[in-house]
Image 1: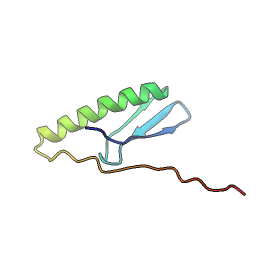
Image 2: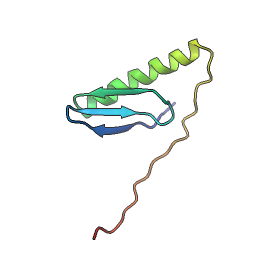
Image 3: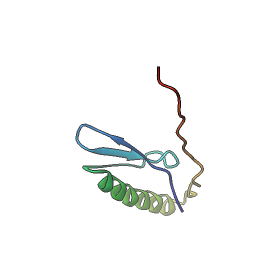
Length: 71
């Protein structure tokens, strides 16, 4: 299963979250680290949902870039 993650730069590195998994977030000093950490966070998050008997959310978020002419 794939989940979209949003990666944002911070003053000390990067942070990430998944719109399909509210509350599932992670940080890292580099993009590679935050992606790796976010993968682990998602696995942990889904394990917790399963343990509590919750349904695993489907990944239905998508993303796109819109190109506009800058003035």
